[in-house]
Length: 131
Image (cartoon, rainbow, N blue to C red):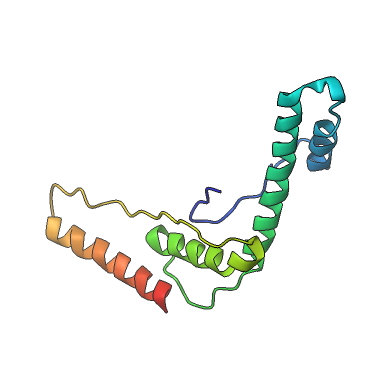
């Protein structure tokens, strides 16, 4: 999964019909013996992806991170990582890999002030993460 710092969005958040997820699953379960291996594989993967997405969305929405993280930027990203770490058992994973980033280090002026700001943001976010 790829998550933004604001978490996992709903799958098809603005469907054109009210029961779009059901229609998608019904259409993709309509394959026949002569549909071919590619159609069957695609349909199965789509159904599995939708189910995995829904499970992860439900788990993340239920997670309570008691630590106050800085809003936005690296703080929001690390909060999302903390939420994912708390869902490890329910997701049935042994190991996760997370990637977060913080831009703004390529400074061409006011280097000292910019670095102080970046490092302060990073330090505050890391303190919340390890708390």
